[in-house]
Amino acid sequence: MKRKDFLEKGLFAGIAGTLMPGLIGSNEVKAKSTYDKLKEQVGFNHIPNKEIKEMNTVLHKANSRGHANHGWLDTNHSFSFANYYNPERMNFGVLRVLNDDRIAAGTGFGTHPHDNMEIISIPLEGALEHKDSMGNTAVIKEGEVQVMSAGTGIMHSEYNKNKDQEAKFLQIWLFPRQKGVEPRYDQISIRDVEKENDWYQILSPSKDDQGVWIHQDAWFHMGRFKSGKSADYKLKKEGNGMYLFVLEGEVKVGDQLLGERDGYGIWDADGFNVEASKDSRLLLMEVPMRL
Image (cartoon, rainbow, N blue to C red):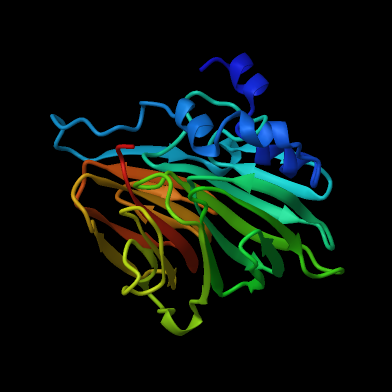
């Protein structure tokens, strides 16, 4: 897709809610689904080659991300989103959106639609108030994780609960394994599963497993590592890729040094080892590489 088409079509009706909260017309909602719009825009540069047996990687430095400051929202996009378009940064397998958002006190995203997306929110500071068309009203805070399976369609809003404190959170979207599922919402505390100097799971495909669950063969882990500590990660499902995002600190994966907010994608590999050069906090997303 060319940049002109990308900007003219927009990602989805909900982006209007990002830029102009609450100003979403019914015609925009019906025009084309979230899934279809985002599916049109995915790239082919991060698809595994079955003939290649050696590990492949892609590095996304923090300062290479797309950036937008709307006053109430200051955001960085690891992948193309809204007015940020980069044909080499459309997706990593089914991982389509990784937004690093800062929301000013007392503001937020007005009511807007989604469908057929698995949407994960991870608060990093402050608190967000969530409301949706399924009747859920909740506040999510640092130390918790929220998931929405948009499925056949939902409307929701997300606001900074505090009037005197900025809220920071990661907004992550994955293409689902199947379309048209019944919408669902969940949030949990992950404080009781936190570990030091090791990975701890916060998301999986199974409702009986640790963390929240989604309609996709994906596993998310977080980890806090003291300087000098290291840990291995072993792939859960053959053919998946792994995307490491450094929330704080500095780590090495092989010879690659990664700093705060750097992203590092790995595929055609069974796993990897990470070593902390400084006290660090990490998010690891294992996802299917084929849509």
